[in-house]
Image (cartoon, rainbow, N blue to C red; front, side):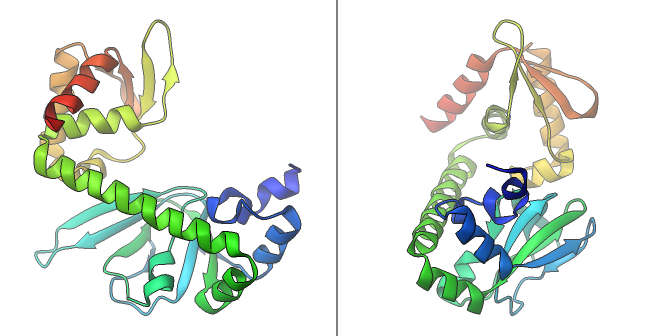
Length: 232
């Protein structure tokens, strides 16, 4: 693929990867490039948001806020991820808000334009349904982990799902992509509990912690055992 194709926002999104480059250019032509600053809100819960938002660069967090003001992070979107397909399919206003974790470039599609694209390119609709199905599966797995698993198993599972660089022996190097308070929210626990679990894993020589969120997984089997035990 050419450098120009790689630079297309839509070329990074599974939703549009079934299209030819020429078709992707067509899709990109109706996208609205949008820049958001760190901590800037993309949209709020309950808002009339008739758009599909694709992350080109940066990261965007999706979260809900309880009546007591507690923020619960649902997931974090990175380059190629998108949000807004559920509202497109159901017409229901979002029960969550979206805000930038860092400066980000977005590609925004009005639902009216998206509808025309789906009518013209059936693969977009199919991949959209696949995306909804995948997120439903992830939500069910996360709910099961919260109900049946303790914090240690959730932390172990999170570490195992992070992108890893394999080092000497069976060691794996990972980097925490978020602040610990945000990871704690994502795992439905407190920052103090997360820190205790990481310290316990370090004391047990399962992981080794370094500066700037760098973690070496020394015993992946031990982490896997924690996850498996919670599922029993």
